[in-house]
Length: 224
Image 1: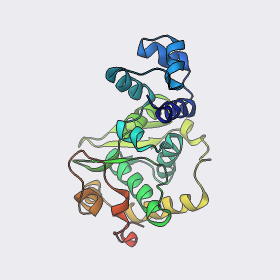
Image 2: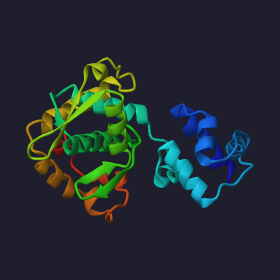
Image 3: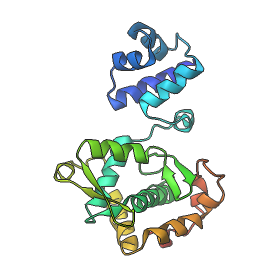
Image 4: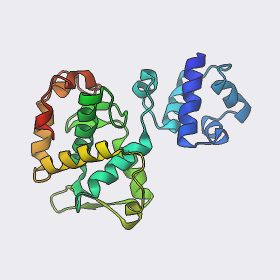
């Protein structure tokens, strides 16, 4: 394993606050052996590497892209949108986050959270969206209620309301508010259809990562 990849593994683990011993245990190796991995002195098998990515909660595309998504900031973006609404359908919330990341990229050439988005049936969705939603639900930061028509409504809890949105700047907060205002009265089906007609979605193959760069050819006025 190259020293660059080894360093990236250590950076991701440190950022997520996962102890070396915990990862070593889940990989079925000693802590000493895992330390050697982070030092670039030990190679992992293909299955061990896939297990490591799973434990770290990152996709192969995220890892090989070299950009480490800001998971804490992405969670705060979720809470920021929820604080502007009584509740938001789970699918629509994923699209609002997509708008925030890609619109920020349009002006700054970097996304708000650093999350990669994948082309799936219901439009572009961040790889870790559903996992992070589950984590926030388990932590009591959000509640999820299923309606009679099967829609999953996401709401912020009292516990979630106590969380500080320290990762989000004033400019980012304004963009989130503008996007929310633009799409507040729109149905989930309408917003999904809109994302399907955008170039990042149309130019990507099914289940592939959609391109931020292509988004610069869109009209941001249609987003916020």
